[in-house]
View 1 (tube, rainbow over the protein chains, first blue to last red):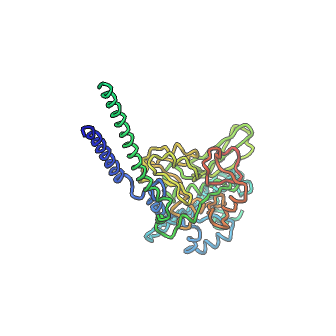
View 2 (view 1 turned 120 degrees about the vertical axis):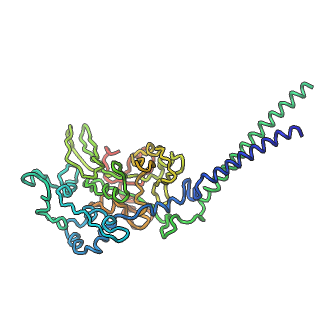
View 3 (view 1 turned 90 degrees about the vertical axis):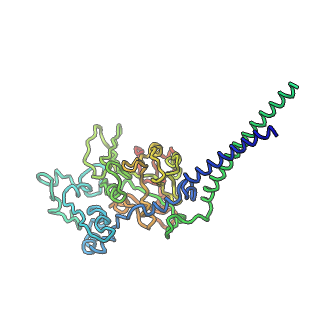
Length: 154
Length: 264
């Protein structure tokens, strides 16, 4: 019986350690951890609604701006989404319904992003060597003086 | 007498060490069992669908496809990504690289991630070809970034997106170092890992990622490998496709066509 006391102490110690570990685990590990894998399962659902959808696509713009949309889809810019130049729909029509005027960038830098002559662009893509195309300094709204961005012609 | 004494001592020592080992083993077994019990239900079909909505992640397996010959380097994708995901200044979830390649040398640049377009560039060698390569998280099937996460904050969903749980992330940055594609960064405000989610808040609502939505030349495409007749699936199934850094065996789910050997 004298030796049995040592075993009893060890068993108590093991039980105490086990209890502490399991309690700590219960508090520290998130509830849905391990639901689908080694991560907090609830986060997948959170990620689905982590932020509002900002880009609505050209079809959503056409709901209100049918004229411009029809003109655009009939021209060379038919694949150029409205939001490329005017910013995301979510910044134009807020979640609460208020409408904010979207940016209308008439500067030549907007056009240059796609159409300035750069060697890496595909050769077939329409590009403009600004030095040869325009006489004098290239600045301001110079492109829009001749070209309509909603239905551009060469 | 002395023999017995020694013998008794020895057996007691053996008995104690045996008991300790047994106890240690029991602790490991119990804790391991508890952990398995909680993660074991992962495989179980009883777990409810995440999100609680109509979206069933078992019905989709997303894939991304880039045709480098179509990219004009306008940077609309990177701008849309910034606006859609509120990406902080100076960091990018997607970006465009310009390669200028000659027989002797090559030049790669990505001014401001390509967001403002690309100015003409002068190189100090004879360039024979030049092209743009859009870059994005490859959402690897065997991704190193989730393997190194010490707290289970980074994971791959059943429909194939690699995501970061910023409530669990401790910002240690191991995943940022582990990613061979440079797709991750530590967010300067939250101090947690951040990366492309394939716009998980959009694709689970039936929309395309913002970068794909705005791409004017369809250089970027997004599709579902589990859907019959999906254009991206058709390319992955039937065409010659490439991946970035295949030798690392990360199994990217972002596929490229017409990729040059210079691209890493």
